[in-house]
Each structure stands twice: as C-alpha cells, then as structure tokens.
Length: 516
Figure 1: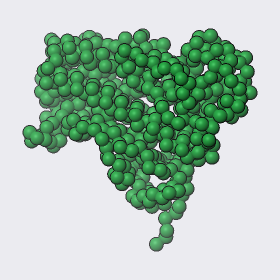
Figure 2 (figure 1 turned 135 degrees about the vertical axis):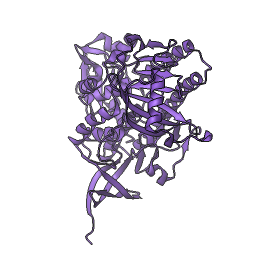
Figure 3 (figure 1 turned 30 degrees about the vertical axis):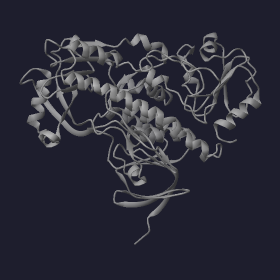
Figure 4 (figure 1 turned 90 degrees about the horizontal axis):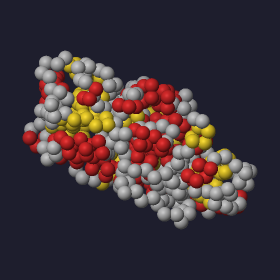
C-alpha cells in the first residue's frame, strides 16, 4: 500500500466555521501558509448565529467585505428591536428598539444582523482566494510534537499526512482536540437543552410595532422568535427538560408546528418547518487556551449563551489576536514568548463575555418564569441589547502592551458605555480623518505608527508610518504635536508616547515582540 503523501503548511486550522475561516483569512493577510479542514461538505445551512458586533464589522471592513455583508443582512434599523409578550399577536406584546444614533460616533460601522449561513459563504470565498480550504475533509489522526503537529486528513477517501508548525483548534464547543489535550472547561452546569426550529411563514399581518429582530414569548412552550431574513425565514428557540421526560425526539413536525403557531398566537397560521437543530445552552471557558503548538479559538475555548450574540464575535476576535502573533514568530520577527500573550489577553475577555451572556440569559429565565412583568422584561431586555462597552471597550494587559501610566476609563455602565481611548491595550479609537476615511482604515496587517503631521516620526524604521493632520485625532489619541501611537496588527494600541525618538520606538517593538 502506498504511503500517504505529505504536505507541509505553517499552520493547520481544524474547523471551517466563522472562527476557522477568520483564522485562515488573517493568516493569509500576514502571508502565512495554512490548511483549513472542515468535516462538513459545505458551509452551515443553519443560521446558528446572527449578530455581528461593531468590532467584528470593523474586521470585516478591513477585509473589504463590509458592504457585501450588509447587503446580505437585515436593514440596520431593524437590528436592535426587541419584543416581549405572551405571543406575537397578544395584547400584552411590547416592542422597544435601541437608539442607534447614540453609538454612531464610535465606529465607521455598527452592529449588524447577517445570519451565519450567509456570512460563512462570504468568508469562505475570501479564505479560498488566498489559502488552502478543504471542506468535506476530516482529521482522523493527530500527533503533537514539540516542534509542530502531524495530522492525517482524509478527503474523498484519500488520506494525506499534513505537517504544520502550529495548529489552531476551531472545532467547536465539543472540541475533540481540546479533549485530546485534556483541557477542562470551567463554568456552571448546562443551562438547558435547547432546540432551534427554523421555519418559513408570512408575518406580513403584523403591524410595524410588532416586528422585531428578537421577540421573547411566554407561549406554550415559551421561547424566542428570531428574524433570519426578516421576510419569511425565522427561528424559534425553545427547549425541553430531560428531568421531566423530555427529549429532542419530541420535536416532531406536528409538535414544531404547534409550538410555532402558539408563539405567533394564531392557530392554523400557514407555517412550513424548514429544519430542527438540538443544542445545549452553556456558559463555560476552557481552563487553558493553548498548549504549544496547539491554540484553541472560538467555541473550543469558550462557549457563551446565545443571549447577546457574543459567541461568534468573541471567536473571530480570538483569530484576529492570534494570527499576527503566529506570523511574527514564524517569520522570526518575534520571540516565542509573544505566543503566551494570546491566552493572557483573550482568556480574560472570554471570561467576561461569557459572564455577560449568562446575565442576559438570566433575564429570559426570569421572564419565562413569570417573575418579571412584560414592562419590566422589555426594559431589561432592551437595555442589554446595546453592549458597546463590552465589545469595544475591552483592553489587553500583557507583555505585548507597554503601559503609559494613564488610568483605565471607568464608565458607570461598562457593559453599555464605551469610552474612546488610545491608552495602551485598548482598541485604537475611530476618528474621521478624511471624508469617508476612519483612522481605523489606516491600519493594516503590520505595525502602524500614527502621528501628527510634521511630528518628526515620518522616517521611523520597522513600521508603517501614517501622519495625520487633524486636531480632533490628536486629542482623541492623547498625543501632542510630537507624539505617536503604535498600533499592533490587531488594531490595539501597543505603545504611546507624547515625545521621543526612533530608539524609543525600537525598544517598544522589542518589548511587544518579546525580543528583549
């Protein structure tokens, strides 16, 4: 029997959902070779996630696909509308929408709803344009060594041995790679056994005041109705209790039709069941995010409840954080210690994100149990729909960030309220520097030094230098006429100075890249 052929890549990615695809795209932007393997033959047919956070939209903008994603998604004005009621048709139904204008100045883009099945198609095309992406390919064996990994990948009945320096495990909440490494997850027991019922129905009979991207209904069984395309395609999220004899097998077509019609509030309303997907609602974080040469990302590293739409976004930002660090080490530009900062930076963010998703889920539990009035429920649900403090205001504290002694912003509501700052560790803030051009648009896959025009930093070595002639920018970034801000490839500030020389910049890069 012939030996399987051997292929070499710098990075192997296991899992072709949004997180794995994001890792592939980012590694290609850094000119790192990768192979992505996904056991399913195609992208997701089920819209598991829908909400794309402002920060993730900024990443999509940097890939040049923001407009395409927005065309595929729902109108922005419908994104944050939420409703509660006994049913969609009940007299007690209440609807409230978050004020988009309040957050408009914080980014060149904004939170959007585009279902995962549509988003993955766009991301797959971008990934395949620059990297080796193989759907219908299964990793059947894995050997982990000190200097890399060797895996057996089977596609179309043909086995291939793949050798790579690093492996990114983006293989989901039931990650076999995480289990192989013996890494435990930490968090409460499962919150519930859930079922997503995707259905087709005409909601045209509902007046505008009863149309929402998300509605919680206390019908029988209770649950949530989510807009997929806001026209005919919807999902009902409901559940069952095994302790009371319930199981996923209960969700026959007749049962699903009755559940959906009860949620709508009109017996006999025309409904077509498109698909049914059982899942487990959890809020857990892996005890470790990495065991070199393997790095966990997305649901393999953390599983949030769907309440708030944080899971996919947190995972994409894992990939965004990890890719540039792998690239710097692979190119010999950074010391291996830089890779330790992946877990140092992302695990605390995952812990906070999962905790906030759990808080959101508890509001729904209280409502379904009848412990909140409809008015109390709508106020609390709508109040948690805006989460810019969480998705934009987080910051990193690691060896890849050089503190400048300035205090961290302390808003009264750190979940809802984002305070722009160029303090090291934080995402570089958005400022319009030219018509249609954000300061974020000036960043790329390299280190970028942002500075005022004529500051003296124009010929700084080892970085892309961008001079900005804008008093508003200088004020927002906290630098004077001679200052500069060093932004890492993931858009987070690594170093800031109000004055210095090229030697100071070189020392900063040495520290951030673990070269000293």
